[in-house]
Image 1 (cartoon, helix red, strand yellow):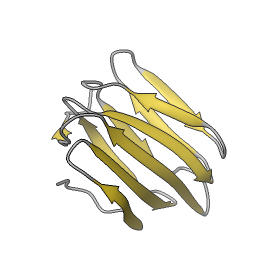
Image 2 (cartoon, rainbow, N blue to C red):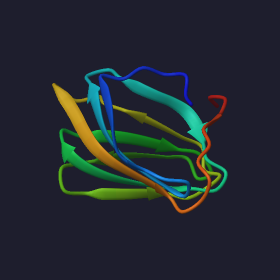
Image 3 (cartoon, one colour):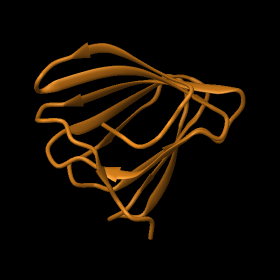
Length: 106
């Protein structure tokens, strides 16, 4: 599925077109550059601050508790926790077939 390790990933609901997972990232955890061909990522921050970097356009976003962020299909992005201690977020992915395509850093 992916080639990274974070503190915890808990599946909440997994279907053919939609996935919902609860992520916990320890300080310094990184989900490397990647993209999805069909599914949109919806991030909902529950604890800490989440850093989301995107390409095309190149942006760096810090998402706090209670905020949400959306990444459209085909957009290269990287997710990290630069805050202490942990960052927890709910990730809703869909609608569309899930894939995880590695993207090279720029």
